Image 1 (cartoon, rainbow, N blue to C red):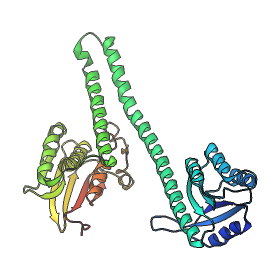
Image 2: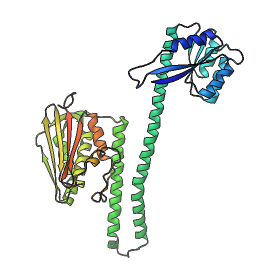
Image 3: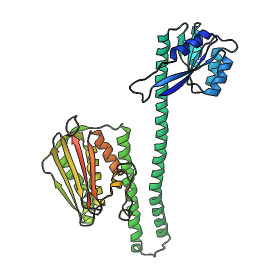
Image 4: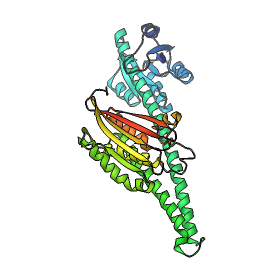
Length: 378
């Protein structure tokens, strides 16, 4: 339960006490709210007292009469606007001329309640205001979360790009100054290392583009009948040169076309990430086996490698953004830490799920289940 403070500024004691009585046991609760709201009613007989309470107690809602002894309600409203206070103001008056309504609205009044008002009229207005307060709080919370995510994102990005850029810059300076000699072959190792660093930065940028596409929800998806077997074969052909370098054999255990409604580019991203990881974290001379089989109302895709494996604690976090498993066996393996995060987000979009089993030093198995209808996989 959350409590909103309501300040009633009115010179009529009956109005102030009436509001307190009507809202004493009143609750506002909607299915989309994660908590109900009740109300604490504060009272002020003049605008001057009202301003003092506003400054001291910061009410959420102000029910404000215009005709007051001393300063008028519209002047209180002007004060709140000038101070940029986060208060929703509702004018309660029986003298609401058009000129006053225009002035009050321009100064930030949210609504008007005519006097005399019924309990239902007051409750209805408070319900609408409460929804506004709740949604505004949620918006602010999302904005704050977004700022933190952006800060983390930029921090990680700057760290991931700073190190390889510094390394390439250092190697180029050494080459320019001929520190290793005058023969081009003297710099083969530096050139190879620079190319590796540039390749890592390119992969990071491509992963970031994939992540942006998935999370923005703005990219156009082209849903057609896609052949999972064909896309898996294409991904394996793309990765084959890398596999040959590592002497890793790639085996596809699916020959028949297996069709599902999907976006071919998205499915290709899934296969590319899973297969490249299976090669990258494999042992020289190992193998990668990809299977695609119907299973009930789902298509089951498995990618099995004979690589370095993972611990249970590693499995729990591998689908988080920018997470890379760090160990003596992985410290020389480049990566953005985004591939599996992207895979999971894409599979979630299809109503599917991805599971991992792994044994350190023996290998890992990734299993994806994608429903062929709108029902969860059985």
